[in-house]
Amino acid sequence: MTTRYRVEYALKTHRRDQFIEWIKGLLAVPFVLYSQPQGVFEGQDGSNVLTQTREEAHRRYSEILRDVEIMVDDHIANQNDLDNPFPSKLKLLVPSIGPFFTRLPLEAAFKFQDRKRYISSRRFVSPSFNDIRLILNSAQIMAVTTYGTLQLATFDGDVTLYDDGQSLEPSSPVIPRLIDLLRKNVKIGIVTAAGYTTADRYYARLHGLLDSIANDTDLTPTQKQSLVVMGGEANYLFEFDADSPHLLSPVPISRWLTPEMASWSESDITSLLDVAEAALRDCIKSLNLPATLMRKDRAVGIIPVNPEIRIPRESLEETVLVVQKILELSTAGRSRKVPFCAFNGGRDVFVDIGDKSWGVTVCQRWFSALHGQGREEDMIKGENTLHVGDQFLSAGANDFRARSVGTTAWIASPAETVELLDELAELMGKKMS
Ligand code: IMP
Ligand code: MG
Image 1 (cartoon, rainbow, N blue to C red):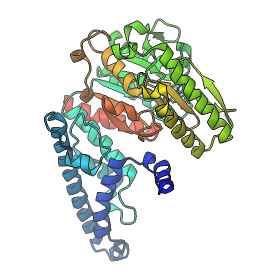
Image 2 (cartoon, protein in one colour):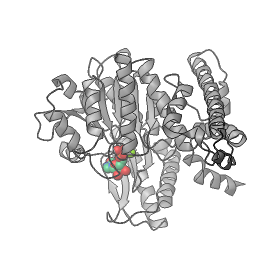
Image 3 (cartoon, protein in one colour):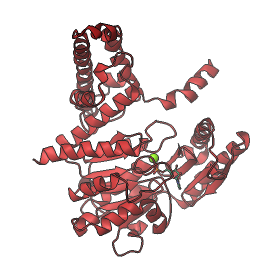
Image 4 (cartoon, rainbow, N blue to C red):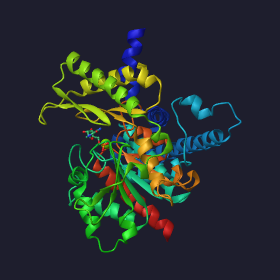
C-alpha cells in the first residue's frame, strides 16, 4: 500500500493538474458517446454525417464548459463569503482548486479555441490536456480584459520568452508584442528564477528587448520605465534605465522590499540554504548525477558538469522531490520563517529564497503610485495582473506560486506566448473600440 501510494505520488500526482484532468474527464464522456469514428467511412458518400457529429460534439462540449463556468462562479461566491465554513461544490470535486481572481468565460473560450483547433471535429483524439490548458488561458485573458483592465503583465523567462537557456534575441517575435503592451500603458515585469546580482547578466539574456525599448521612438519615457526585471524569483529588482550601459539599473533593496520580506533574517536564509545544499549534495552522490553544485547568496542549485550533458529528467524530478521533502521537515523549513521554492528547471534543479508570488507582489507594489512604499489598497490587484509562465505543476515548478497573487496563463513554448499575446492584443483592441 505504501509503495503503491509512493509510486502514485512520485510519478503521477505532482505531474497532473487536477482541474484540467477533471475537465478532461468530463469532456471524455460526450467524446465517447458522440464522436463516431465510423463516420470517416460514412462521410465518403457525400452525406453530412461529419457535420452532424461535429455540431453535436460542439454543442455537448459547450454545455459542459458552461456548467463548469457556473460552478466556478459558485466557487467564487463561496470564497468571498467569509462566514460560510463549507467548501464549494467545485472544491469538493477538485480538492486542489485554489482561489479565482476573476470568473472564467469557459464556454466562449471553448468556442474560440474550437474554431482554431477543431476539437469537435476529431473522432479519434479526445479533448486533450493541451486543448483544455489553452481554453483556460483564453478564458483567463478574456476575463482580465473584459471584466476589468489589464494593468500588469509579468513573464517568466526560460521557455516563456525564449527557449530554455537561450536569450531574447532582437529577431524574437515576442519583442514587438511586449512593446505593444507598454504602448497600451500595461506595466511589464520579467519575473525569472535566473538570479544574477548585476545588470550585465540580465542584459545578456534580454538584450533584444532592452535595445528595442531604448531605440523605440514611439514609447514615452514613462512607458519605457514601465519595465522591470525581478530576478532570482524575488531577490533582485532592476528597472529600465536608458542611460545605463546595460539599460537596467539595480533598485536598492530598501525601495522595494515588502515588510514581510524584510523580516526574513540572513541567518534563517543561510540555514535554509545549508540544508538544501546538503540535500542536493546527497542526491548528486546517491543518484550519481553528472552535476556540480552552485551556491549563490539567495539560491543553491545543481547544474550539469558541462553544457552538453543532460541530467535525466527522472533524476531531476527525484532530486526536487527529495530536497523539497527534506526542507519541509528541517527545522529551518518547518519554522516557515523564510519561504523557498525548489524546482526542476529542465536541465538543472534550484532552490531559491522566496518564490514568484513574492516576485509578482513586488511588481504589483512597485508600479502602484507610491513605488513600493504604497498603501496596500494602491497596489495593482490580482484581477488586474496576468502572469505568463511554463511551470504550473504543483510540485517542483516555479510559476505555480504566482497563482496565489494574480491570474495566470500556462504556455508551453515561446511560440505559444506569441499566440497568447496576439489574442490579448485583439481583446484589448476590441475593448478600446
Ligand atoms: P525561469 O524559467 O526564467 O524562471 O528561469 C529558470 C532557470 O534560470 C533555471 O532553470 C536555471 O537554469 C536558471 N538560473 C540561473 N540562476 C538561477 C538561480 O539563482 N535560481 C534559479 N534558477 C537560476
Ligand atoms: Mg520557465
